[in-house]
Length: 131
Image (cartoon, rainbow, N blue to C red; front, side):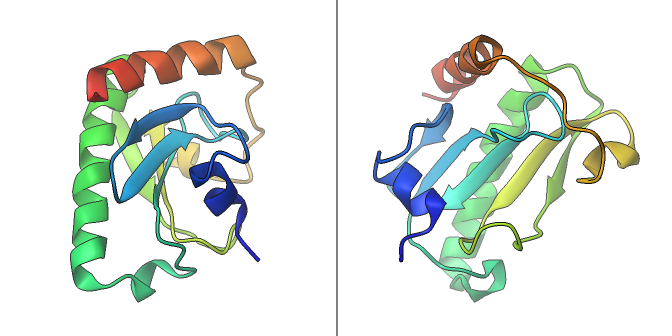
């Protein structure tokens, strides 16, 4: 069965797209731990991050780096935190999370309420800068 991320890649489920190329997709997390929380995924459905072949793993991190630089420029923060947990969805992914303190990376923090309009506006800004 296809993962929810594969359904997003295939356009079966909408997303707030931030960047895309032939191998990767970045989009805003709909349950963010911080405003701007972005997911970077390979288009190839591979469950575990460390099962990605070396070339794909390296390319995914370079893609994520580009997204992180633009995200940091658009969202007030000290850094873009990076997390690879991999338990939520059986599809390799990187979390890029704007942060002001290490505690901002905790998935047990209360989730901020962000309107669809604000998500759409941020995604459009990021997409424009990354295109």
